[in-house]
Each structure stands twice: as structure tokens, then as C-alpha cells.
Image 1: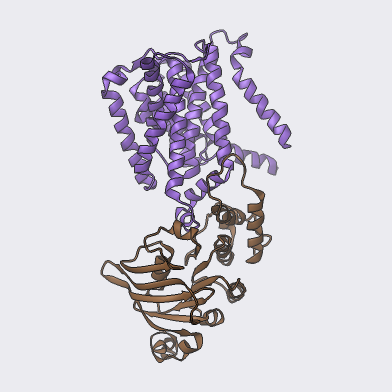
Image 2: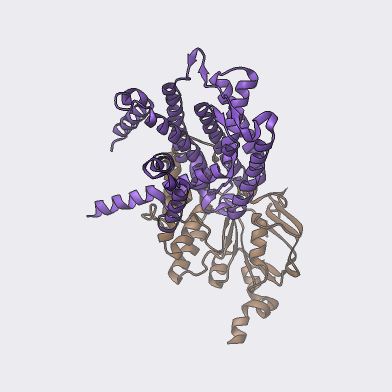
Length: 252
Length: 323
């Protein structure tokens, strides 16, 4: 982490147990403004649990979450969204009978709130939605219903919806899951090209994507941070190889 | 159609509807059609309000009659206790009482969904019904509340059947405009978002519990107004107005007509009114089973036409156009 840079996300001693299963066992991390941080680790390491706790989808059993210094541990997901947190889910979470444009417009309209009646939603909101769709590579698909979009297009739309919130922090939970190599490359370049002021936390299995995007990498294993450093440092870490990166090699 | 042409057409249709008793008089001497249309329009207001919940926000309430009944009792009781038939007073009392009741019940139910929401609204409405049925000193209990006054607007006496009809028709037109204005706005769009994916709406920054509560109170208030209009029309309030039967009737009306559309609850009200009032008169006495007919029709729509009459009409229209 750049010395003296302000922590936008700060997590301290986060624990989460599901019944007897401990998903997170005392995780602490700091992510500074504009940083791109990848969280990697084997299945069951607690990556999605961490993201869901950050987004306010599930409460932690213990520990503190801060956003730009403010304690948000007890805030609900909609309150966190208003403070600038956007979440792209691992499984697609969209409004399926609505068009791509309507999906993004719901995110754009969220900033002005829903208590506006009688007048149709302003055209500027739809124009902004269309611009966002173009940015993620969905130009020409604005009027298509979500259920008629391909899996890859839905992931692109997810990103457009999250970006339309104009977030300060973007939480990406496996944005390239289930995508073709071409689609993966497109999403990766898209995320790489986002405004550098945006802080991004990304959970990802594809190491090419991780090393292309991340400034720093945090490795989770059985609910604990076992390594934390620049991409190059983590690549060289022996323990990381043991639990994760080297696994494929060992098996092969 | 151009917007101006469309608006002219809608305005003409509304004017024709409101003035119905005057131009129908020559051929409608018994006033049967006027009464039928009046009661059908009251059901339409009630169904439009329920559709805000069922069709738009995805909140299947089986207790909506609680607010209809509350409005009916409030209008009747306020008129009798305050000794006035002034419309702003009695209708205002109806709207206020229904809104407060919807706020109380709403706080308890809006965090539950689907079948749990259905059962909770049903249970709480049954409590309201039980109170209405047993609090004889205030509501008249099982005898009902009789002698509800027909309203006055300043010095204008609305007690004639024709003017009573006009009042109902104007209220219907205004309700339809309100529901239309809500549905097309960012508010209506947000309700649809809550219906389709509440979790994602929260992640976008919408306080969905408050949104659902606002829709619940709004729908309850409009239902209360429908209840008051019913009390004025029949000059009587029955505990059954707040009962399960009336809730089911509105629910069937919405689903048969087509949930989530403006035309659906209106079309459903027309069909339900006809089945309740006209079909029995065409059948021999022993076959006057309009509730059974309504039930069978409801089953048929649920099995074969989930989108209701509006959906059937739409697909027929598309088929004609495709030729």
C-alpha cells in the first residue's frame, strides 16, 4: 500500500461463522483510494463471504468494517450503496423482464430516489443508461430484455448497472465467471480502463485477469489472510503456491 | 396514435362515463344500468388500489378489504357522530382512517414476502373483521351500520342516484389517473424493481422496506375511499365489507382482468360485476351460483391465462396483426 494513502476500505478482525463452519476467521485488510485489490484463494476460502459482508448482504459475527473512516458495520446494504459502494454479484442479479436500458436506469434513478411521481422518468436518465451500456460494449442492445441476453452480455450489463451507481468502491465477485476467453478479455480491459480514482476489490479465479488488474493481491485460505502484497510478491510466495497457485501443477 | 389524439379520446371517454345517467335516461328507465355501473366502478377503484400491490410491487395481499371496510365505517360513523354529511369531512375521515390502519398493518407485513405476506395480510385483516363484527356499540356489529348519509358538497346535495353515480365516476377517473401517474413515474419503476429483485434494489441504494410500506399505505388509502363510496351508495356498511370474501373478490378481479396493468383491474371489475349482477337474473333461481362461477373462472384464468383478460386481448391482437 502506498505509504500515507488513505484507506477507503478498512476491515479489522472480521469473523463470520455459519453454524459451526467458520468462513472468516479474523480477517484484517486495508485498501487505499484508487487501489485495485484482488482477493484470491481456493474454493471455500471465504472470498464471497468477505465481499457479502463488505456489501452489507450478511452481517459479520465479529469485527469492524470502515468505509473512508466511517464505521459501516451495522449499516444495511442500501445505506452502503448510498455511501458509494457498488456490488457485482457472483451470480447474475438483474431485473429479468426488463430491458437492458431499464436495468441501468434503475441504478441511475437510485441517486435521485424513487419518490418522484406522475412524470415519466426523465430522458436524461435513459440517455445516461444508454451511454453506460455503450461503455460496457452493449451498444445496440439497449431494448433487449435481460432474459434474451447471453450470459456474457448479462455480466457486461451487471457491470453497467454497478457503474451507473457512480460508486466510489466497486466490489466485483468473479466478474468473468462462465465467460468465453474473448468475453473475459473484453471485461478485463474494460475494468482496467476505469477511472483510476475508483477503488476496486475483485474476487477472481482467473490468474491472468488477477495479474492484469490488481495492484495488490490478498490471499485467503480457510478464512485467514495468508499473504498480502504486490502481485509479484504474491506470485513468489511459497505458502501461496502450496495452498493455491501450485495446486494445479502438483495435481498435474 | 398521436398523444394529442389519444388524450382527446381518453377525455371524451371519461366525460361520457361521468355523464352516463343523463344520456342513458331515454332508454334506461329503471336505472338498473346506472346502479350496476356505479357498483362496478367502486369495485374498479378497489381493484386498481389492490393492483398497486399485487401487480406493480409484487405484494399479494389477501387482506385488502380491511382498508375498504375501514373507509366505509369511518365515513359512516364520522357522518353520524359529527352530524354532518359534508363530503370533505366524511371522505377525509375515510381516507385518514384507512391510511393509518394501512400504516399499522404495513409496518408489520412489509418485511415478509410471497406466501408469508399473503398469510400475514389475511390474518391481520381477519382481526379487523372480528373487531368490526363484535364492536357493536360503534360498528353495529352483525347488524351492520345502517342509515349512512348520502354526501353533501357545500350546498350541493349528492343524494340523488344520478349525482351519486357522478361522484363515483369522478372518483374512478381520478383514481385511474393517480394509478397511471404512479405507474409511469420513477416511483412505479422502482416498485417493479422491488417486485423483480428486491435484493438488487437494496444493493442499488433503494430503501425497499420504506418503498413497500409507502405502496401499502397508498393502496390502503385508495381502498378506503372506495369503501366510503360504497357506504354512501348503499347507505349501509356490513362487517362483510371488511371480510375475507371482499378481499378475495378484489384479488380475483385483479387476476382475472390482468395484474400489473391499468386496463386489467378495470376489465376485471366489469366482468365480475356482470357475473354477480346480470348472470343470476338470466338463470333459473336454483342456478344462481355467481360465486361458484367466479371461482371456476378464477381457476381457469390461473391455469390457462395468467395475464388475465388484458393478456388474452393482447395476444389476440398480436395474432391479428401478424396475419
